[in-house]
Length: 125
Image (tube, rainbow, N blue to C red; front, side, top):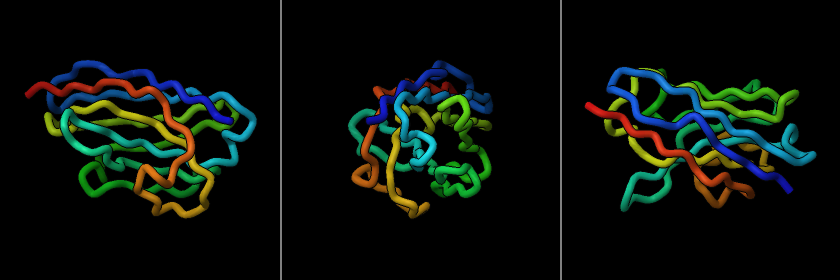
């Protein structure tokens, strides 16, 4: 069992930065891949980024590549999403998720076993 709690969302101007955090509880965090997804109003939940259990391998959606960075600290049971050069189209509720597969290219919500409650990110133009 893994419980996830996101924080760090807020309101930011276009071009600004935010760092999202995901605090995990449970003994299996360090053995699980972590992902970030986002969901805008009326839209489906979309993949943003994924990191493998060790933090050595990452994968990003094309829409955020070069602007967002996913990372983790297994000693602290934390995952992060650093978001730079934010755009209004990045506005969404952001969710962290934990999965058990070693495949770094899992981009569908079905590929994850545990989810946080989400944190709102709003980017003004």
